[in-house]
Length: 236
Length: 261
Image (tube, rainbow over all chains, first blue to last red; front, top):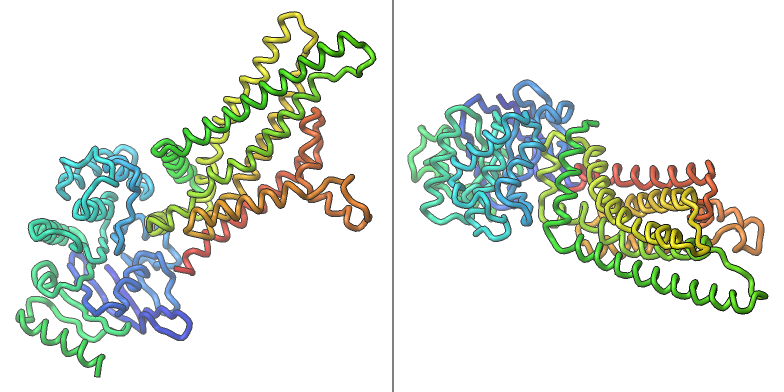
């Protein structure tokens, strides 16, 4: 599904992402772990064709991210760190707008919007103006927005941030259910979240890939130990 | 270019003006000012014609002169008010982090720029349409048997001119909005730019001949013909290149966003 090959992003002399390579098969839920500034968000922005890579390539379902970016953007859902919401719009209005932007067929828009509203638990809020929503609901609208075009690949940058424990459990369930039919990449700081929601985990530090494991192969404490070893190693 | 994308952006921009008070405040203020100016101009004109009727040696002034003055003032007010329409177009997307959404959607920079332009341009069209009440009022007034006759071909050419000039100011504002995430900076730069363009003198404002070349860039020089009902291809070429230049700048600026963030 996704082939990342020697992906590099440089800002001047600084490499935010340094020769990163990995592959993600269809239907996998992949967790990206790493300390702040490790290059997780930059990697995600390159996967969504928002940033062009300095070197290397990304191919999604056989299409190159740079050369065929319009085709890719149509089939990818992306939740950035800050959910891209228009405060003056109503929830339904906003989601229909995003569906139109993503070139969802006119006849499917209503149906798609209705589905994501149900899936993300927004039924009670669908006519509210986005500015009046709490942080948790804003985050949910952000996730709904990433799903409204029914994408094959969903990329979520810290999807559970700002949610209360009950909401976190709901969203994790949602992400798990997404993994049944789609490929999901998510980034997070929360180690247990990876254990619960992901099939596989990649740890990135200083733009480099430092660990790549299937979640089923790690015991809960191992991940924490490994992660802390990497972060500590950086400080020495 | 994809028309459906342009239309999506256009619709969203136009609707969003009415989600806040901005459109209502701008439309209201503009119409109020124009109404006051219209009243004052008309009153003075009537006083003058009365004086003239009593002492025939005073020169007659035709209503066209008054109308020309009125639309010249409208032009000034437009160049001050249109930056308020355009300031948010791209700045707000940057500030609210919604630019990411637009740039990760299957939509080209050209569609984005055109859609944004049309959003502001539609609001402007609405505003201009509402000012038609003034010439309509005058023509109704003329039917009462006074000596005020309104030449509709001049009115038409005046409106064509104002419409085009407004489109140009919107294109200027669109560009300045695309380079900053701060609406205040966008509106200030647009105002300065508009005023700069406005104050380039026409051909009679120069002492030396080489400086007079500047008059080719003068907006007023090209605009004044429209007010007199003169249809000039040179003016059309001027405004078209003016418009294209600023639209192209916006396009380049949005295209380069991919390489900046």
